[in-house]
Length: 141
Image (cartoon, rainbow, N blue to C red; front, side, top):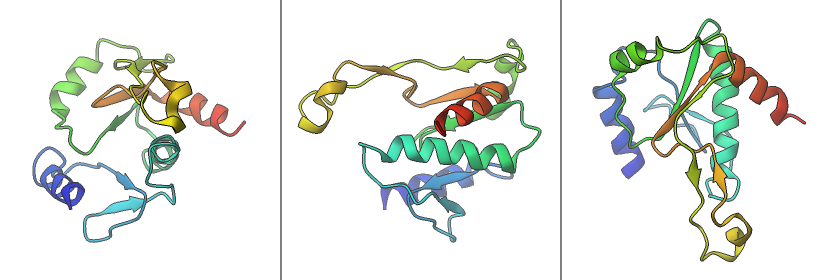
């Protein structure tokens, strides 16, 4: 229910009248959330949803220079974000965001990943289109 509340809030505020795609493990037509058929767990679900979200976004937005991945509890100031992105060349392989570090050290399933850096970015990350396309090519190997 928390997820639904956050999606409704996003749709009523920063995502209002914008072409924004929301993804989850299961579709929710009332909220306009696309399903990914990915597990809803931390071991594979987040990665799977990210890859599937990028794949669908590349198709849905064929002329988008940037692809933004934000989590459902993040508020995005789109106009400001567009201004900030003008400092970068979207034709290059660019990742904008912070690296995250896995803190799942106390769970046996994740013990090997403890302290591992990954491109989760916390609240979100931004990929240039060429990087997103390369990422998709590499994800199928």
